[in-house]
Length: 284
Ligand code: ATP
Ligand code: ZN
Image (tube, rainbow, N blue to C red; front, side):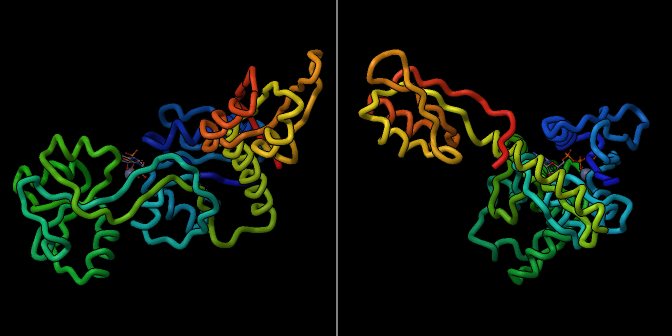
């Protein structure tokens, strides 16, 4: 049995549960007071925790693995194995100054009081760049601290920058980027490692599917070779003759990123009736 720690309530919670659901693993969302749940169709138990507690729980063995932001792992300084980036919960951690304050590079940070809930990451950054500044640790509402005279600058999570803007702050140094990852204990028993690999296999199939589309199109037989070259698919495309003389239907898989660029090229080759269909799972 594998124990997975998830954020109980917050930005990562819904997406984490949805990811498991897409992997065919059913878990009831935590109700008030429920801190653990058994997965229905996978040998796994889920612990619902504050995200700050997840790295330690994994490191000390209370959980075998968990879904948590890279920023939290870095802040807690726990040695964990990062098994897979998950592509959600993306943000950056930056230093911001009041808009009107002059900034001429990192030297301008010297002597400032910087408010943050990420003192460890900030300390590392300051030491790396030989900056002597005072770290003022606070647990929330970091953005208002310069406005109320508590600090001269802040170091905090930025996603769109609108919170900074509305507090009269300007981002001056990006210190790290972060996303949610599946992290695990460094030493798992063979049995747990096998279960974790099964979970990783499923997540990768879901991720691959999300990045790819199934494409069907009709093309004149004379263009088939060129069309097939643009759509190599997972092996090679399937070609089915149409009732219409000299035409075929071609089925393949196309990467989301290549999609628009290739659609134009396909149309130029004479492709018609192009259908793009989402893929649910993709196993290579
Ligand atoms: P908890 O109660 O579990 O301690 P929290 O308030 O610390 O929750 P959330 O705000 O739910 O945490 O954020 C969880 C994680 O989501 C962050 O640690 C970060 O990795 C990621 N994240 C992505 N975008 C943002 C954002 N705009 N603000 C805060 N966190 C973000
Ligand atoms: Zn937290």
